[in-house]
Length: 205
Image 1 (tube, one colour):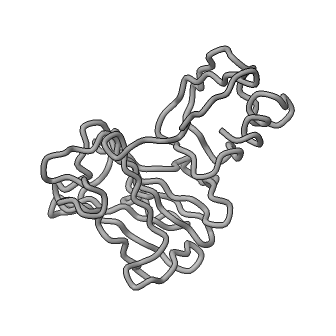
Image 2 (cartoon, rainbow, N blue to C red):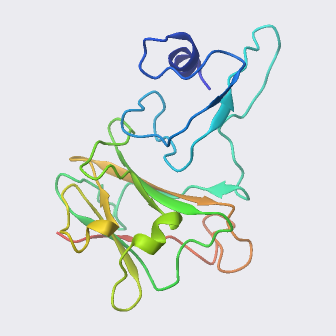
């Protein structure tokens, strides 16, 4: 955690981002939203219990945000396959998982969209910042059993809105998070050479 983040979270009570004092454990009772602006590309999957230690009297080395691939893998997409940058102000996009071909994990997975310029979440009409595996029962499948996520700034219509991932009005990027990926095929491991790979993003207009 860098000094700017630490200052907002534990020093400046007027920052609008203040969490707790140094050393006590604090419980974040909600997931992050567009109102959380201190950390970029933050995780909106999980509430956290954290302790922010004052170690000024000691020498400390910590990898606060580090997970190895056995714990989590984070595929990121900023462009289409042809290299075109993703832009929610110009285009609509889809991401389709073939029937039963969801990310292969032992825990859970998610897909989150961010505004490219700020690397933050965006306010939207349905207060939805990601689509993840715990939401699968409420999503609508296609006739062939596949699942299409609609990544666009405007609603795709009432029939498709359960599968809508609201996008910013401008350049965007997507982060897929796979927690505790499987090691047996299909698997994203080793990263970049696994037997399961994220489906390609398609531009639909």
